[in-house]
Image 1 (spheres, rainbow, N blue to C red):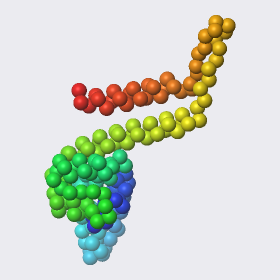
Image 2 (cartoon, one colour; image 1 turned 90 degrees about the vertical axis):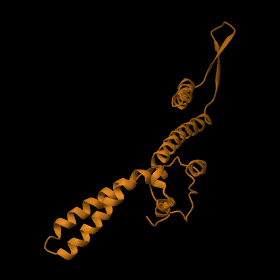
Image 3 (tube, one colour; image 1 turned 45 degrees about the horizontal axis):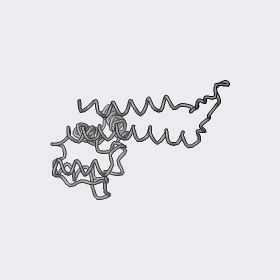
Image 4 (cartoon, one colour; image 1 turned 30 degrees about the horizontal axis):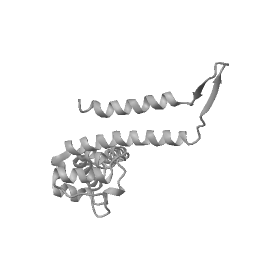
Length: 171
């Protein structure tokens, strides 16, 4: 909680916390003959249990799609000045009351994730289009031509789908 938030990997935190919880549970069982050591393991597991409710909030804040504009939006809506800087820790955000706005943070993070997925898809399309060559072929002897773009229909479909998905949330 004292590490800079920008160094936290939101995609791995739930796995890490679950692994730590399992390890402490095993340690508690293993150290039954050593009550002082077992007490330390119990205390650590209690701290992990107290931390668990914050996992989803941390995951939302550290979603790969969260950009500076999303943090600016959160700052404007919550009144909590936040930006992804080395000085911001999750503990400092908790002291400012970020947990009161958990649903708002999750909503903004969900929108950011959708935007990020769309951005990645469009970048992939642009990358594919850099190597595409348009072919114009004569159609028999009619004096007419047809053009051939590999994957154009698929890309048009993807763009249409993302456009519809974006506006579907507002309808």
